[in-house]
Amino acid sequence: MLNYNEILSKKYIVYEGQPFEVLDARIFRMQQRKPVNQTKLKNLFTGKVTEVTFHQADKVDEADINSREIKYLYTNRGEYWFCEVADPSKRFAPKEDVVGAGGRFLKPNSLIEVLTWNDRMIGLKLPIKVELKVTEAPPAIKGDTAKGGTKVITLETGATVNAPMFISEGDVVRINTDTGEYVERAN
Image 1 (cartoon, rainbow, N blue to C red):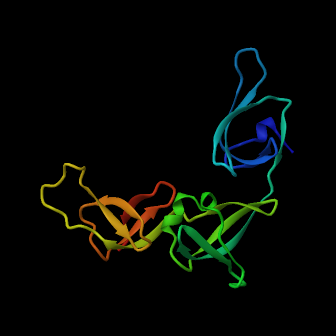
Image 2: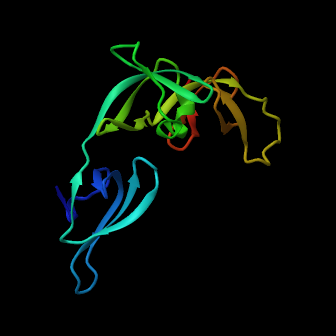
Image 3: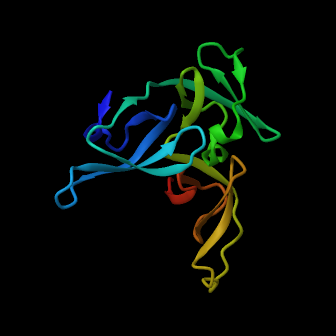
């Protein structure tokens, strides 16, 4: 059990019977009142963010989130297929909302972590940055900076991102999987 002042950011709690990740927590006291903890919680099933205020008498359970390593295999008709690292014959395809938007940056045979709560899959923990090869990049046209000096490139996974004009086909670039944005050229 966690007291109201132990509910801090980056912790996982059980609130109203569902697991939540604490995104932000501020403990403060307003004038003569008792201290409170204002938090932003993200529901790990739905992804919905809510604001909850915990008072001094409030206590919550810490969520027992387990993680294990799995291997990404391939994508077929919008389904992402994974297998257990130790036993490749145990294949499964979680729902697309579990994989999230970062799934478009997964390379075949890459190892990632899956988060589970009560034997129910709640999400994937992708690396923050991945290196991917550029398969398509339109040529840069001199003086074409009206669009902010960026162009749309296609990566080896099929994902498209905005990148600077100097990126060309065959380059390896780093992509932030959280935001889906170009970070830097890797080679």
